[in-house]
Length: 236
Image 1 (tube, rainbow, N blue to C red):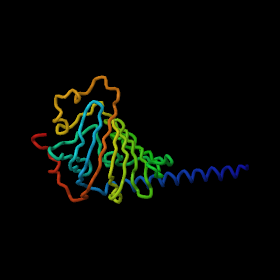
Image 2 (cartoon, rainbow, N blue to C red):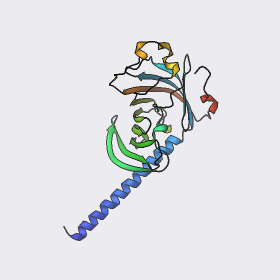
Image 3 (cartoon, one colour):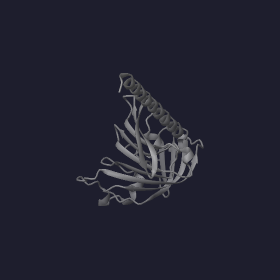
Image 4 (cartoon, helix red, strand yellow):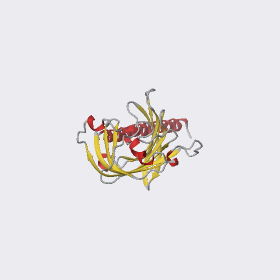
């Protein structure tokens, strides 16, 4: 192999690498813009929270979201404010904002579908998100899985399934896996079990992971929700 051939091959590899990097940047930005296009939504939901030291019934209610980070769950039969920390129920809160470095990490099969895996690193040192891994269905431009590591909440994994609202990037089903060592349930969720020994965190709990299963039954999207919807009620 001649020196000229080696130089040409090296040049082609550099060009290929640059093209992949550009494609990865474009793919991430397209996904981010699709997610950001949803300014607010109201959704009827069913939710099941699995925490080793708690016995929590399936919740049914209405979830309200307003960009960038307002979230409220109104239970059928009572009101609940979702905790501000250790719980990120929307994809919007798990995708880095601002300038980022995007790395193409290859392909993977998620839920029987081909995905492109991207590693996204915020360039802002003050960003709460340290690293986000996103598995993207390029055909439908949706994230089928995310794994986000933040300074405050540790690592949160989200697995998503889509249906009627794919065009908005809104899932029908979500499974979150998160660290629950400091997890505190909203008052409206646990009040029916107050005083039960099963509600009290065991000090020697070894399993620090919990899961949240959410089924979105219907959505009303971009209706112009006001901040008053998210105002705290006196009994909360």
